[in-house]
Image 1 (cartoon, rainbow, N blue to C red):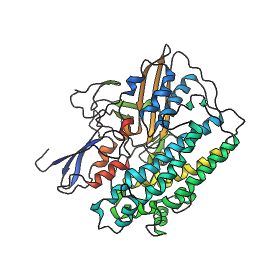
Image 2: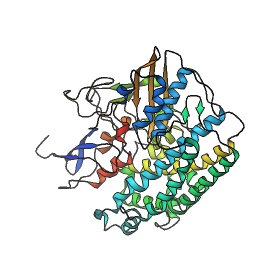
Image 3: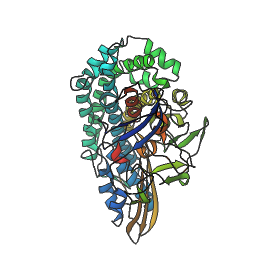
Image 4: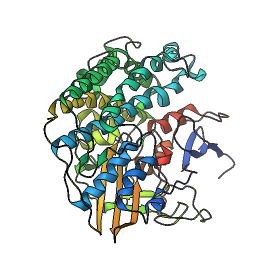
Amino acid sequence: MTEQTRRLILGPFNRVEGDLEVTLDVEDGAVRQARVTAPLYRGFEQILAGRAPEDALVIAPRICGICSVSQSTAAARALAAIAGVAMPANGRLVADLVLATENAADHLTHFMLFFMPDFARACYAERPWFEIARKRFAAQDGGCARALLPARARFLHIMGLLAGKWPHSLALQPGGVTKGVDSGERIRLLSILAEFREALETHLFADRLEHVAGLGSADALWAWAAAAPQDHGDFRLFLHIARDLALADLGRGPTTFLSHGSFGLWPAGILAAGQVGPFDPAAVSEDLSHAWMAGPTLPDADKDGAYTWCKAPRLNGATAEVGALARQAVAGDPLALELAAGGGSVLGRVVMRLVELARLVVAMEGWIKAIHPAEPFCVESPLPLRGDGIGLVEAARGALGHWLTIQAGKITDYRIIAPTTWNFSPRDVMGRPGPLEAALVNTPVASGDANPVAVQHVVRSFDPCMVCTVH
C-alpha cells in the first residue's frame, strides 16, 4: 500500500442478516482493491455430519430466517435424489408456491427496507428527487414501508395455509408436501394473492403487474419510467434516481452468470461471453486458499493468508454472479441480457428483482388455479442406507446448492454453497477476486469520506445474507 493509498474498513453493515466487513484500498478517489470478510462462522456442514438424513429437513432450514424455505427445498431435493422419487403434480405446485412466496417477499423487503433507504440520506439533499425519496424511504417513518409492510404480512398468510409456519417449516418433504389444499383454501389463496397484487400495483409499480413483467428491453424500461412523473410508484422513482446517479455504471461485476433454474419458468444454465450453455454441477469447485478453513468442512481460525470464513466457489475455475439478474439473463430475457452486458450493475440487479417480483405473482395465480384437490400431494420416499444427492434451487438471492452423502444410514458429508457464498466469495488461489470484490473496484470514494454511500449501493445491490454464507 503506497502513501497515496487510503485504507477503509467498513462494517458491520446494518440491514444485513449476519456480519459483513469490507476492506477497501482507495487511490485517486476510487476503490482500487476490495476484500470482503464474513467474520461469523456458522458451521452447519459440521452440525449435519453424523446425523440421520431426515434431520436435514429440520436443521437445514435453520441456516437462515429470511430464506429458510430455500434451504428446506434444497435439502428435500437432495434427499429426493437419493430416494429416487418425484413429487406428484400437486406437491410440486404447492412447493413452488411456498418457495415463490418467500422469494417474492424477499424481493420486496430488499427494495423497500434494505436498499432504498440509502437514498434518503442527507448527502443527497440537493438532488431533485430527494424529498420524495425521503418521504417514501426514510427509516421508521417512510411511506413505502407503512403501505407495503402490512401487505407483505398478509401475503405471508400463504405460508400459514400451505406450510404451517414461516420460517423453519417442515411441510416440504422429498416426496411432496405434508399439507393438501381443498377447494375453499384455493379460493382463500387467490384472495390473498389478489390483495397483494393490488398493493404492488398501487404503491410499488403504479401499473399492472403484466405491464412490468412484460418490459422487454432497456428502451422499453426507460420509456415506461418516463411515461409518468417520478412520484408515480416507487419503482419509477428508483429508475429516475438510477438515471440521475448513473447506477448502470456502478458496481460492474463478473461477466459470467449462473442459474440453477427455477419453477420450470427459468432454466438452469451458464451465461458466459454472451452465450448461454448448460450447467453441470460437477463444474463447481470450492477454493479454500483465502478462507479460514483447513478442509472443505474443517475450520482453521489461525490460517495464514486467510481473511474470511467464506469459501470461494468457482465454476470451471471462474467467478460467477448469481441472483435475479443472472436467473433472467440465463433464461434469455432480453431486458436482463441488456442489463447484464459487460457485467452486472447496481441498476441491473435491482431492476430484475422487481421485474421478477411482478412475474412471480402472475405465475403464482396460475399455479393456484392448477391445483386439483382430489389428487395426491405427496408420495412415500424411503431412503436407502447409502447414496449421494444434490439439491439445487434458486433462492431470491440466486443459486443455492446442497451436496449430501449417506453411508450406513448416516450423513457422512454435507456441503452448502449459498448465493452469498458465490457473490461474496474471497480471492482464489490465482488471486481472482469474488464478484462483490470485483464490483467494488472503481467505486467512487470522496476524500475523507469514511462511509461512502456509493459503496453501500454496490454492496446492497447484491443483498447480503451472511448467515447463509459460511458453513
